[in-house]
Image 1 (cartoon, rainbow, N blue to C red):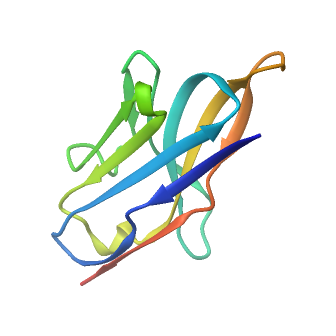
Image 2: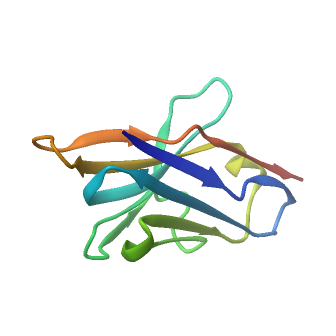
Length: 121
């Protein structure tokens, strides 16, 4: 099986920075897209940023210029550097990856357990 383990969340003041990490482990053959999503209380889960295996990225308009997604393919890890944080960035952040595993056909969608990010004003 595959596990995604996130780390790096916490409490920060507005204007501060945090760096999230998500490491994928298990019977992984290949990883396609990796990304970060977030869900604030009472709201739907939304895309924050995604990155392909080739390094192409896409960001939500609300985080462009403030957040940077990157990945280390050798470590099966994706990162989210969050700068100039705002109170509206407060949410549970989830890691996502599209993964092909040994012994299976095709790609499957995996999620981490989520990490809380709280930005105080």
